[in-house]
Structures are given as structure tokens and as C-alpha cells.
Amino acid sequence: MNRSKFFLVAALSLVVLAKSGVALGKPSQEALEHCKDLEDMAGKVMTLRQEGAAMSEVMTVAAETGGYWGRSIATLTEMAFRFPREKSLEDQDDAIAEFKNAVFAGCLQGRDGS
Image 1 (cartoon, helix red, strand yellow):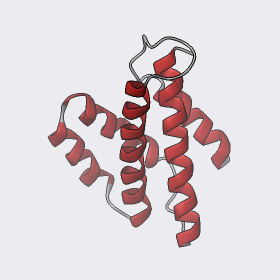
Image 2 (cartoon, one colour):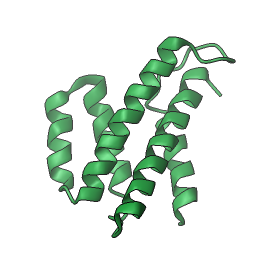
Image 3 (cartoon, one colour):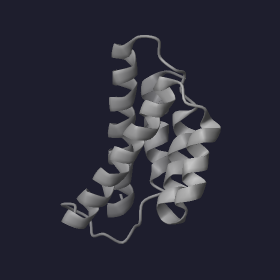
Image 4 (cartoon, one colour):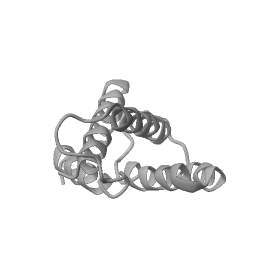
């Protein structure tokens, strides 16, 4: 599966992470802030992946965090580790940016019910 298709699947999978119930239309400030937080977390997780961190180390952080954000870290980790570690810094940066964008888009879709 090429990277673009996988990111689309990943974004749609993230809909489950987001809380629904926000009205259709312009996202609320609360939704934007929540999705930005999730996007930032996704960037950190994918950065660790691209730097060669062990999945077990990242999952330990998820377990220690607990609650909603711990579950979010665990889900993001499972998604990020489906991708190979890119060899060049440019490709790593691209993978991180694409992952962050997919997470943000999936979060907004989940929060507005679309």
C-alpha cells in the first residue's frame, strides 16, 4: 500500500479517537485545540518512530500516561509503527508532516460527525 493510501486509512481510523457531538460546519475552538493537541502528539510519536525508537518504549509512555491521552498515544504508536523508518532526513520529515496532517484531518472529521 503506498504512503498516501495508508495515510488516508490512518486518518479514517483516527475518527474513533475523536469525541463526536460537535455540530457540522465550522469547527469549534475546542475542537481545533483538541485536534491540534492530537496532531502535536502524532508528530512526537512519528518522530520517535523515524529516529528509531523501540515501539515498546513508546508504548510504555502510553501506559504510564493512562486515560484518554494514554490510549491516544497507544493508537498513534500502533499506526506510526506500520510505516517503515525512512532513510533520508527529508523523507523522515515528509513522513512526520503527512502523519500529523492525516491525524489532524481525521480528528476534525470525527469531531464534527462527518
